[in-house]
Amino acid sequence: MKILGIDPSLRSTGFGVIEIRGNPADAGRSLAFGVIRNKPDVLPSRCLVKIRDDIKSVILQHQPDAAAFEGIVYVQSTRIAITMGHARAAAILAAAEAGLRIYEYAPKRVKRAATGRGAAGKSQVAQLVKMQLGLKDLPPEDAADALAIAICHAQSTQGIVVQMPKEI
View 1: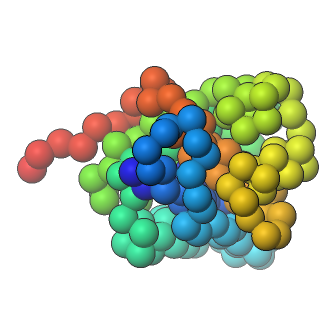
View 2: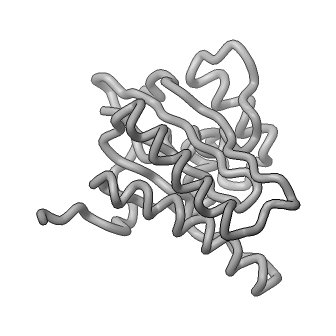
């Protein structure tokens, strides 16, 4: 099974694709990971198009079976929450258009799956994802978060189903 993990953000959306063979408790192997970067001077609407297009490209290249997202985190600013929601919607749209099953996991659950504790910091998540997947180099933090989301889904398909593909 191939799982696409996505950590959406307007300026730096992390993605990671892992493949699980056999035991779901095994973190599997990384097929791809990276960060979709949008410069500060790019209009938000153009950022959303880039997120959608780049996620579609990852899906076409790696043909994942499911997409997993981290649930909405608490933010103090309504403006930031709305912007994060827009980036998340662009990524979910790409996965939904591809007919993927879409799952969501609470942030603490993702961190627990990757590190064993729900309050781990970003650098700790990156270090442990590197070890679990046997990566040579430390992945960028946003990509590491996306890989952790994919690992979380691999360990438990009991997430909240956001969208199931429908027959047309």
